Image (cartoon, rainbow, N blue to C red; front, side, top):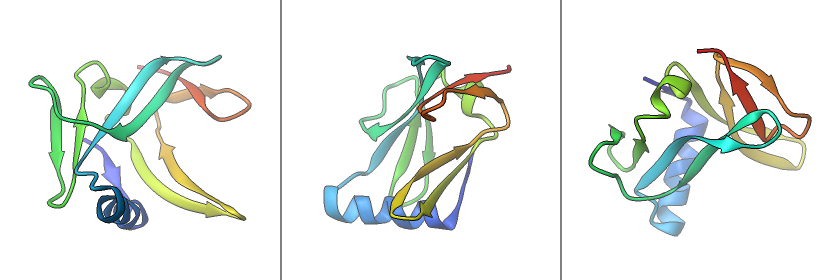
Length: 106
């Protein structure tokens, strides 16, 4: 469903050690000037979620988000003094200038 780089896995495992993050809500929500924003937060899986189990952590994805993030790659990058999770999504068609909100082609 999604790809995750080794760098992203290592960072999530660090989060799990320091903040006891075992399930990460991954998806999209409406908002921003381009239409959607990615969701990445600690959460508990709901009954109708798609759960991707990676052993020491899980991704919980609501059914509405699946078409938007299917085929996406989650990476963790360092650019200068900044480091962040980066969504590499071939379904994105536009992003706002600040890089927070995106739009999709489904």
